[in-house]
Image (cartoon, rainbow, N blue to C red; front, side, top):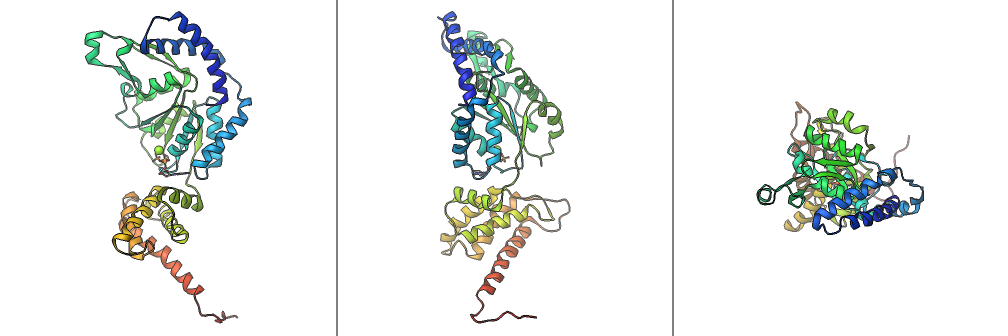
Length: 359
Ligand SMILES: Nc1ncnc2c1ncn2[C@@H]1O[C@H](COP(=O)(O)OP(=O)(O)OP(=O)(O)O)[C@@H](O)[C@H]1O
Ligand SMILES: [Mg+2]
């Protein structure tokens, strides 16, 4: 938990105890909902809490997160700082650049809950907020106990991080619910009432800049309510470390070339969107299990090329009118990177005593 939250929680606790005394006798989730709402309602006045004393905690948190996340020092620092300041965050970056990994690590290491929501066209307000169980409404009426909490209500009540992937893909009406919650830190649900955000609630949204769907619509509505963090591809060394973390120890030279092939897919003239580090992880994993099947080494040329075609070809989004197929592009890149290395090692293996020609 962030230190600033701890202070707010102490405040919440006092309010909660006072409210609980008033609501004694009311049981179950109703008590929790009422208490949470009233208690955090009282705390609205302390939302402008100071963040200054949390420096040591935040530094410790950054260090713990960096044990799990390769590289990304600046991004982790900025995310932790924005969340500790009680701000909502938008992570913007291509697929596979570690946005979810970073967020999960921050949530785990800070001990706050984490609600994960896949943003898509089917994410209706009812799916995000929750709904009254129709069968139970028939017998019990619109009782708060009959309400099935969706991820947004759960995050508000528990003071968790609500992480929405591909926020640009969610329907307009669902987006409007989120925009209100971001501004007001509370939600009004018909027949259920007001749910105020418990301490710790923040929204973190992710968006892919390659995705043309809905990105313009998001910009005006969301950007003004969030801190935005741009997340790009990492260095080759970081990507190699990520692959090893996921796929186990590998020959360093082979791994560096695998990562290079994957990185070249991102700047190939015929490719609109290349492979993320996920492709390199899959390539290494497939090669590692293919090699024993063929009684060959992982570094065997055919093992590597076949693993590359399987792992990468489906990930490439080709430009309109591209003359070559994804398989051909992967093969071409593989041969270029690995042939270059054969040439280099050929030079290195030149007979001792050979004297380079001089002019
Ligand atoms: N910096 C990193 N440290 C450790 N693992 C990473 C890092 N970046 C990426 N990965 C690994 O790469 C894979 C993809 O990462 P992740 O799912 O976090 O990306 P993402 O940005 O959330 O992608 P998407 O936009 O598709 O949701 C995961 O297997 C993750 O473990
Ligand atoms: Mg993700």
